[in-house]
Every structure is written in structure tokens, then in C-alpha cells.
Length: 280
Ligand SMILES: [Zn+2]
Image 1 (cartoon, rainbow, N blue to C red):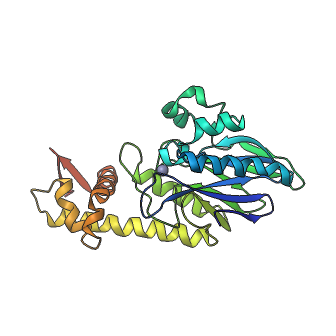
Image 2: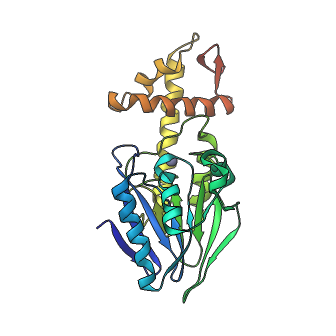
Image 3: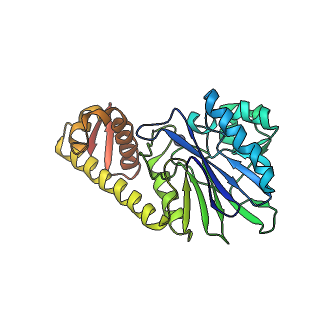
């Protein structure tokens, strides 16, 4: 079932989107028992938009009243339906300034910043703290409800597919910092944009952090093996990603670049004329 209730005042709707395989859908969430925030106006597809609108329009029959749309970040598989959904449902979009800048400032009614609280009134009020968690995308936002220990994580982690860090758009160093921040928050339920809800968030964050650090070690070892002449990023992929299928190497190159950027910032690798050399 792609639309379902996870808890009182919390429901999920998964819509097909142009996202990164093997994921094929982006989750939207309806937060709030009476006042409702609709997370991720994601799908650009007509049939999916119709289903999404029907889902949102059915909420009032449960005593729930949508007040706004919310987007975690500007990637097309998160905001692809914003024009149609805002118009059809007559709802404003709340998101971060970085997202507004990229999708069109006129589409954003309210700019959210780190630390601000979004109170959704109802029999059991929900108080969602806005967390700015860049790294996968600039201005990426998470939402944290302390009483219910529930964390909307956007694309910080997923339970299906991988989270790609692309230099320029993302930053591996910042991403790891933000994962550690989320790791310490005390969540018992994490709601990702892709895949099933995560009921052991800290273990999940730990796996993500460990996975990135293990890859970083492989990248560093590959740079080491390239010797004093170093190597171009593209030539490091077969070594650093020898354990992954060749088919994912084009994406692996982005991640490898993100790791290299971090290793350069950390002073462990030197970039010289498009080649990467281990720091002495
Ligand atoms: Zn994304």
C-alpha cells in the first residue's frame, strides 16, 4: 500500500519519481493530527500527481487540514510536483532559502532556518524543529519532533538505494558532520524520502558513517598506490571501487571526487594539475 498511516497524525504516501535506481519512488509524509504539513511535493508525473492530490484532499475527512507544503531540498525528485500541487491544493511552500534560489524564489512563501519551530496544532500538538543539514544538498532541511522522537531525514540517509554526494552540490566533509549531528539527537524513528521508515535510526546513521569512512580509506589507499606521480580521479575509480559493479562507476566517480575533496581539505591528499598525490 503506497498510502498508509504510520501512527496517529503521521501518514506516508509514496509516489513514483525520476529518482536514482534502484529507488523508484519518493515518500511524502503528512505530519500533524489537525494542522498538517505535507512533506516533499515530489512527483512530476500526471497520474501520480492526481493520486497525490486525492490523498491530500482526503485528509480533511479524518479531521486533518493541510496548511503548507514542505520540501527538504531542491533535487527534482523532491520538488518536481510543487507547481501543480501548490496550485491544485492552494497551499504555500515552506523551505530553505537555498532551495528557493534554485527552484524560483517566487514559489516559496516561507523561508525556514535552522532551529526554528513549526507548531502543528491538534489534539496532540506536534512541534517540529527545523534542522539545516547540508552535505547532500545545500540548504537541506530535516525536521525533528522531540516528544515523538521522530526525524524527517529527507536524503540524509535512505533505506533503499544510495545517497550520492556530488561535489559542488554536496560536500562529503559537511555531510559526515551532519550525519554525526543526527546520530546524537535521540531519534527512534527516521522517515527517509526513499524506502521504508527506519526504526533503528542510530544504527542506520552509524552504518552510513562507517560505510563512508571505509570508502574514504579505500580512496586514500588507491591514491597511495598511484605513487609519486599520482593519478587522475577517473583512473582511481577501478581501484577504489573494485568491490562495486562496473555499472555504478559513473556515479562512483562523483563520490570519489567528493572523497578526494574532503581528503584534500583534511590535508591527506594533494591536488596537482588534475592529479591526486598522497600528502607527504
Ligand atoms: Zn537529493
